[in-house]
Image (cartoon, rainbow, N blue to C red; front, side, top):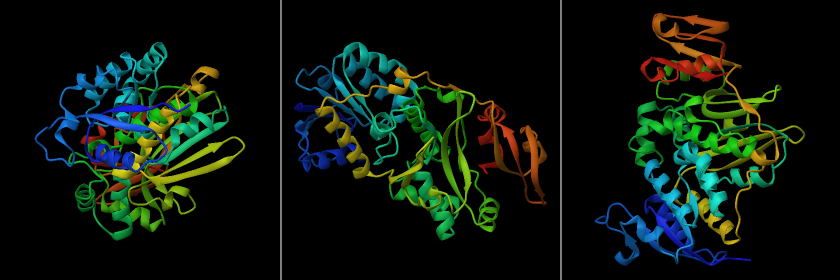
Length: 393
């Protein structure tokens, strides 16, 4: 049975305004945006002023509003909005992956206690319906791994570098000019955005919630011409990849880092602002999902899908978390990496198990070898200060 939805919307930026236009053209859901909470009332907008408020409580305390849609950038403010709405008995659709990754455990309990629903398919991979597929289609215990390009901004930058011969700085500026990257692109290019998405995906894939500080992530800001040259000479591309893999001992591991990708891998051909996700299982081998991971309408369409699902009273069951014994997370596993560095002091921070290839010149050096993920985790917060580049091999 469908439910008539009166929506209170937080945020009227790129995605919020995109949702407004998408919802007006949708014929599949009986939903109306009643009020929008904004931060900057002086900003010129294309809708009547009576449509807006700057007081969050006008939406949270409005008994006529039965669905809150949260589409703001600030994770702390988003947390307070989402929590207050759930406690008021309102279901919520959110796209804030940082907020969700940091607070999902608490928010899941509030959902259960107050019999409401929190949906967030839009928080991971833009237009690709990863989360609901993991909940419904892959709701068994046969998953082995999920690997993907989860950030459209960094993938756009890398595409321009490898396909058009650009450099990192000019590619980043173009991504910002086109609206694919923020003015402060740290979360995108250093792998934090992908990490938050991977945390959410992992909960629905394997049933375990991992804290952000326990996961190794690094990004592409230190990508240098010599790294690009190495990849091209080997016939490879560099992609920023998020990966979660189940191990044979009942545990799993996960990380986010650049990867040297060969032409026979699905994600090799994922370009520009697109995302690509490979789901691997025990018996169905590999399945590939592909779609736009950035932009107003692709993300708004994913939000609309969550709104439509809620109109049918849908809620996540967290089946892997409740019906199976979730695997435990570990960093006690080896990964093979390419490490480029400029001086021996930088190299001394890395404890390799073995090295299979080594190159040195007066300008730079690199090694290829295996290293414990736990060892990389120890230097995670030091990496931005070191002139090194790391890529999985």
